[in-house]
Length: 242
Image 1 (tube, rainbow, N blue to C red):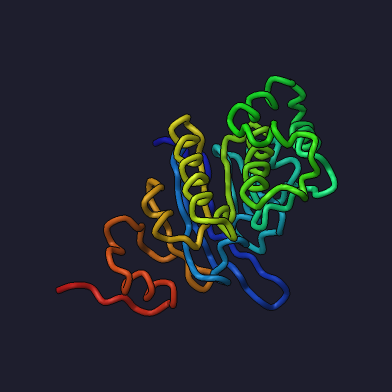
Image 2 (spheres, rainbow, N blue to C red; image 1 turned 30 degrees about the vertical axis):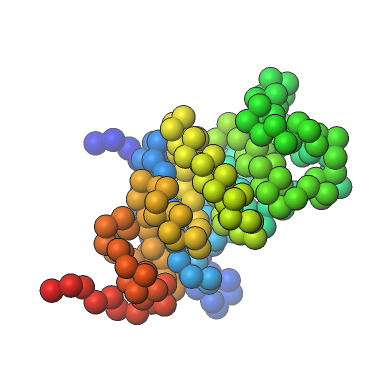
């Protein structure tokens, strides 16, 4: 039996008396591109943040390549190979583009100048604005920067939280094209998105989360109509054809 790269077993995340994630279990194989869709407040971001060690898990376990990472500090989880591109981009606005990249590279000791050069080759706009404060970049340019930062940590698992949020449709297309390229290069990707149509079309399989629970289905063929998709988002029982 092949050990999954990421395994989440019985994960629960709570903020005081409010439970955001309830008994979530999932597996992602090496090289897979998996999407997680659902409405606002469904628990998607909390799931990613618990995997990345940003918020504590109240119960359950998270293993990477067969080894538990639950309870480890976020910086150690990054060094173990898990990198999260957070919602809202969260660049260091007063630092230059290159300083943002160098800071990310330093978290895993990746001080190879060629690594940043490779990021510039993938994202030419970042080299153009390498001396510009990151806060002056457009939303799309900042998204390229945070993805570039994540890649500099040399992740075995790249997780992204709503990377299309607030971006123009053309930029959204570019972001999804980039994720496809990374998947083709062998990067394992776990994507949280509200853009369900884009996600379902791009990934290997899609999970659906409602009210802190992952539904017992994987999406490609099952959710074929807008009506069915809306029903899942709203947590209503879906009607199946006879």
